[in-house]
Image 1 (cartoon, helix red, strand yellow):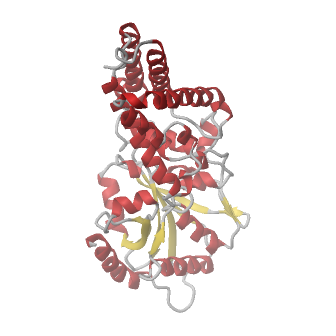
Image 2 (tube, rainbow, N blue to C red):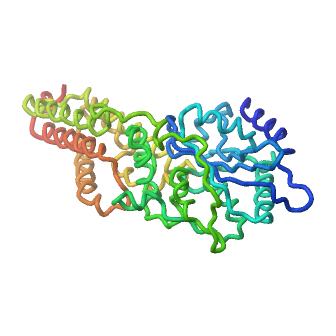
Length: 401
């Protein structure tokens, strides 16, 4: 609540500095500000705001990306999709200082607006930061800190805004999707991308139109160059407020041996060695299967929550649910009970068949997979096949350990 209270105080202080009273004023400049990526995971695509600079008054930044970690049940509500963000008006110096301190590139594009368009934009911004309007339901790719101010600019310009092509279109041979844009900016954070690839389904894998890459402020910054409104250039001038390299504040690459794909290929090698030993000894290592399938089942429970309870737009459909679901918990529940051997054998036969079909048909599935998924799937197939083989070819009294 402290951050929320501080935000409301800042709004109250900043509001008088942004009023355009009486006739339309020509001494007001408005800038679309883009901040390049930072080191935290929620900073990796950058940030956007609008700067209003009225001659003789204190410049104000309109920021649509404020959230309150101290709000009750923040983590649960965020996972559920109840992501409430706030639009606030900050003094410009207070807004930009942390980004400069962190070494993040900050670029301000002065909008080529008429006095009437400027007035309309400021009115829209003031309306958005009023206490009764400030809180909005954030959407990671559809309605965020970049798309909100961009929509305000579009409304003020008369709905005639046309953006330039996204920079990623010239620098990538991959399809332009939300997921592939995220992967570009998450390259040094592979475990974060691994989590996104688990949690978010095919809703972020469709080809984007020319406007949708603007959800990433660092992409939007390039899209403003060459943008037009009503046939005229949108940007009058561009100022580099903090001249750092675009990725200056991002952490360095994760060492190859700590990346998810490396870790899980090592896990697969361990699983293969253990499985060969089990087959030679004709005994199933129940402890290994209990831990492995418990982990899969717990992830399956999380996906169940995200798919069926969360209101996040991109969590469903998720084709990984064919592989990661609560049925994996049958293994730790049944592997210790001799009387349920036939049930577990049937489950593992079905599980192996589903995994094999998933591997063969994945190129036809409209969802991009993380490279680290393959060794996990192969390890699960090994354990499923070995359990069926050992329990069906050896006496019951000898095939479990």
